Length: 319
Ligand code: BT5
Image (cartoon, rainbow, N blue to C red; front, side, top):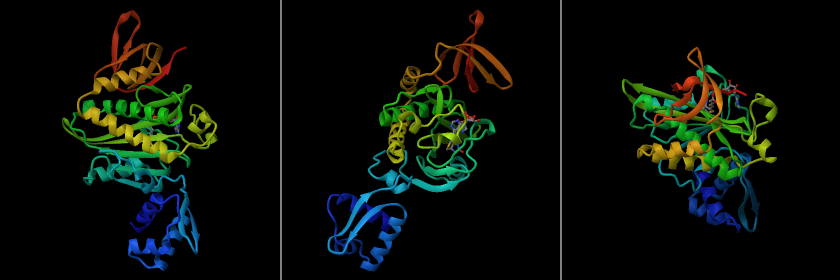
């Protein structure tokens, strides 16, 4: 808490030095204790200049996914009111799931610099080296389990928008859970849920983004924002933008405005109108990707005009 208060005061006075006396008086701690806190913050990567006559000044902040950095002026209503950050964990989805079971509040975010056992769908692996952004959010929507795929659609729309706003890039959404740039995967989304009969008790929305990740550590089908832009991005700024967009689109979703979300999805869909092959539940379906319906299912127009509705699966473009 003291560290956060120090950062708060230094940020507000970022143009000038603030004297050690003023700082320690405001925080009601000794000058010696203040110095220890400053040293700790410097070890965490904060650039704080200390001058014997002038006091302290914040020169730079580290690009680490510290909760206090993401929370600074975040200004969301629900998503990210509480953020817990880790340097390393097996899977943020697993941690969030445990918290979900212990009644953690809706919107709580678990974020990590890297994951040792990052999860994709169907027990696949999500490679999660440092430089990426890996986080999971606890959601408690009042919906039936069959509606949960709409959450993935909502999240894809929000993340796509945030990446576009932050970087100027134009990502596309590949149904159901990928965000692509130039046909390569930059982000994956994994929604898991706990449900009782016909009601969801909570959903864990997990999002992994290849931000400044070392490109050579990822599969050939992947790209990173750094590679696409030719320079590092601020992971803190991007994370804040994503949480803000999620706050906005989740509120729309809760107010039953899925139709608007669906329209936006369609504008940036990767393969609508194209011929695709989908693997789902040990079968393959081929045809033209026609639309997504009001449940977030993909509608395929097969040869001879038959329509098939697909709730989940892996889509490949047929060339
Ligand atoms: C996904 O699965 O795309 C969901 C990924 C969700 C990751 C987040 S990170 C935070 C949270 N905590 C977790 O443990 N998970 C979530 P799927 O559609 O099944 O894609 C997995 C496939 O993508 C793998 O089989 C690889 O082929 C490929 N892949 C693995 N790591 C990748 C990466 N970093 N970038 C791009 N592609 C990757």
